[in-house]
Amino acid sequence: MINPLLPTATTTDERQRDAQVAILPVGSFEQHGDHLPLSTDTIIATLISQSIADAYPVMLLPPITISCSHEHAAWTGTVSISARTLHAVITDVHDSLNGPNALVIVNAHGGNYVLSNVVQEASATGRAMALYPTREDWQEARNAAHLTSSMHEDMHAGEIETSILLHAYPQVIRPGYENADHAADDRRHLLTQGMHAYTKNGVIGRPSLATAEKGKAVLDSLTASFAHVLNLLAKHC
Image (cartoon, rainbow, N blue to C red; front, top):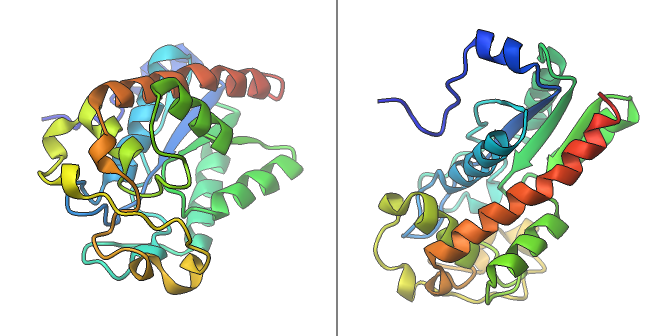
């Protein structure tokens, strides 16, 4: 059975498409409470990227499935690579593109701070690269979907992530999300202490508020908002 999260285009398809922009989903393999899979961020990054590829003439790349999840190291199953390694992988992918001139990183894991540096460095040397969605794009999507919790409150395995999976892959969600809410608004030492200092069940947010309708609205908004990224990159391609 073909994995629906992987692109199936042939080299002939891509030659005929002649896309100037490639889309690279970046996820993670980390705990998402008891109700969401370790691959949640990868699934979400790929869903966003696939939706973009369905709407715009871009080349869809397979996802990077393991990234910088060190803050989740206390939980069984979490796997990470170093920021140096992720930086190198993204740079190598960009440099090896055959066809597209620009690369858009679609990131669904907040802990991948290094991706901002990758894009900054590439742009400073004249290479076309962008990071999507930005904080503003996420906020617009939250507004469009009428999410109840704030972006700060809804940090991990909460309303937005659970909603997206309820919409696209409800079969991967385990029972119990309705009772998994956990608040930890003051997280000033998270980088030093890790997530475990702020949550025992791995959740920071309110998954009980999640609905499939909200998840669809989030994806629709992010797909529409991508147009401004494509227009920006078109000036550099």
